Length: 483
Image 1 (cartoon, rainbow, N blue to C red):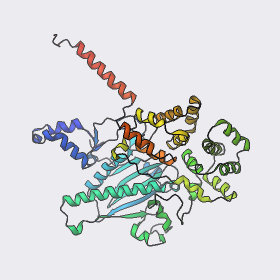
Image 2: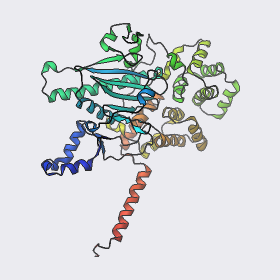
Image 3: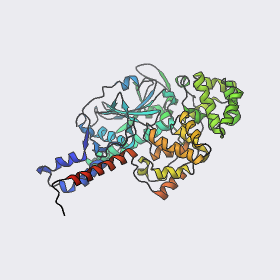
Image 4: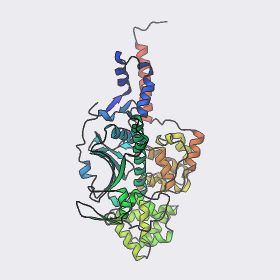
């Protein structure tokens, strides 16, 4: 178990069957549940991050038993200053009690999926790498008296969505606060010491030096000690975004130079063009080198103008290897506000009214069938937001003609089957909100139909096969008494 930190429920029950534990054995299920509640044990994610296949529920992670250190190249090749931002939860003293980060890692496992890199899960002693979505990863690790939190974008830290970074920071802060309070109460700390034992520090752009959150909020500029680099207060806005605000902050600097040199993804192009009127997108496409005839051909091929608006820019990007900088230049030539590009870093936040524990479930066929009936004309945008490729959406539209419900159904089922990031109800809820449909339709379906555990077809077939084998062996048993 020291190699993986994984133990199965049956193995722990076998240990408890020893005479030393005979008094707790009758309460084994209650004690097991209590170990999970205290984050001493953590249920391993039920779906593999790369394949989406269901993992056995019997597998549990015991962080305090994991002794292997991270020896992959992830931190040097992927989690770089060009792609990541970092903050630290800094504790008093020189080291952190191991139980605290162990509980934090267990809590992270219950919220996000472990990332696989170089064929290995990024789960080591004092270190965990997690997948948040297709563009963002999370790293949590321990160094001395600090718990470090990294947000990593697959191309550039200038494209990290501030709403996501803010949400992750708040989640981690609240989780650490809860764990700290538990340990303080466990050691009967005095009322005067019942305050948070850590503070937040922001990292410099080279991910080495730190400034406290308190100091950062009271100064306009900061020069880091080691690199002598100047940082303005806007540097920390990514961690403190007003998630209800739709417009840029007054001091928004727009996309960074590094972000402008990146090629926009389908999702980023969709978020950019969605609020734009048809004339603006048409003129932008012409400024970018597309022709009037190409626009008209798309109008002929697609019934809905929202598809045309996104598709014309996707075609431009693929043909000319277009970058954000090209779009910014075209917008400038059109005398348009360059902050229009900031939309690619903005997501809508809306609290789901359904029970929180449902958010981690995979939607069943029944939920997807019902949802396909009410999605309507935003099916293409929803498919993009869920991570389906333009080619996949074209094939779905071709195969289902003008049958909008069939298109929606095909999009939802393909998303659930093929996606790298675990296809949960929460992911679906967020996508519906971001395409402007809202989540009420999904919440009403959950309310009326309920939420059940989704079992993939391959698992159903395996269960059925085992059942048939068991029946066959029973029939062939020569020692079975005949009636």
